[in-house]
Length: 535
Image 1 (cartoon, rainbow, N blue to C red):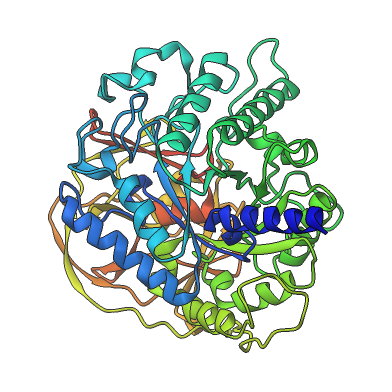
Image 2: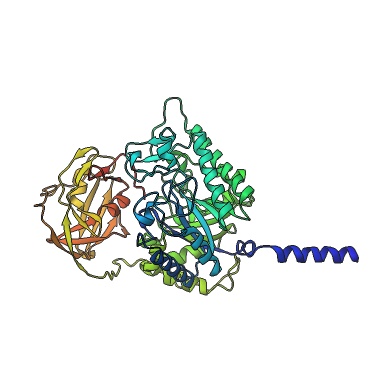
């Protein structure tokens, strides 16, 4: 009896001594990505620590009100840091200048604010990215490892990336992770889907298997680092939604595109969780949502690796059927929650996605995973002609002074800058890319007040393409026209200028999947058909 009593007392002591985070990790994952690259989600103001703190706190409050219990905050978007580091320079998203102290420690504040609300915080790192565009290392901070060691880099002609095959790079990534988990009370370390540059050709004597092995070795090293130095922190990766194509779905494969094989990470126990980016709707022609979910559910079965599903709610079709996705997920025993990209979309309530999530989570009987049937909100489906309620505003469109290069050839566009973004006519882009691997046609649908882009289809020449402008500023009014890609509605910002619709270049690039690069030194915009779109 004394031995039994002692064992019970020891068990009670052990349980009460566990950190609260240990219990939080048993909850259903309801996560939001907070992207900082390009200041997508945070911060919206630079050089103002008070405003940045207030903004982040407000975002947490808004996310929590929807039912979000975890945030993946991008603290190393481009080989830099939103935290105090002796390895990586301060990020330019905070001040506009890489290496400049922002006046406070963002990650320290973020951890405190998240935990005070009972939310988990995972430090999201892009392990390899150095620049989103441009290949000039001289523009980097002097303390940037990429500037000090240019031989550690891959230059694909449009941007710089740390070379995954370089052992010094592997160690740099592990040292970066060690610094974070030792100095900050984060609940996890999180990687996204960028590894080798998409489409980067193999070098002489190099094989695809070599690249896959280098990436997997880094993943294993990071896992070991997190578990050696982190105080209960976990490690997870959000890879591309398709690892390899199957009989039930097909698409761009991570093993061939970026040389990442999540099967090895899961089977080898290199990660605590995996969040495949299954960013497709239930009726997608080649990658229907449930088919891909089932594949990942089967992959993790019996491995102990947690499976969360990454949801691309920035796509209007996905946002509109998010409750249906959650219903599907409950059918699969290994699905333990979801993550939503991105925070900006949730806060804008695109196609009612925030309302659906709030109602869905409020209908759950608890915050833990259960196989019981839970009350659900009615599934939102996209009507044939979606209702659009865009705030109409009138702005001045500034005639762009930048040169525009299409696959290295300077091309004369009539383009305008609005709120810091370049806007182009769709027909001009289609005309310029005609005959390339990214060619597309444009078709006007009067009944839907919409433009439909037909991917991989030769452009039908009308007249007046690439006529150029007169260099004068114009008045622009928010366009009510919708944009479809192969019959699927996509989110895109557009303005009407002189009865012509101009779309944000990056929105078109994302929809068609071509690359956009910017050279500050040359004041030049580049449209590149050889590569896919990258945030």
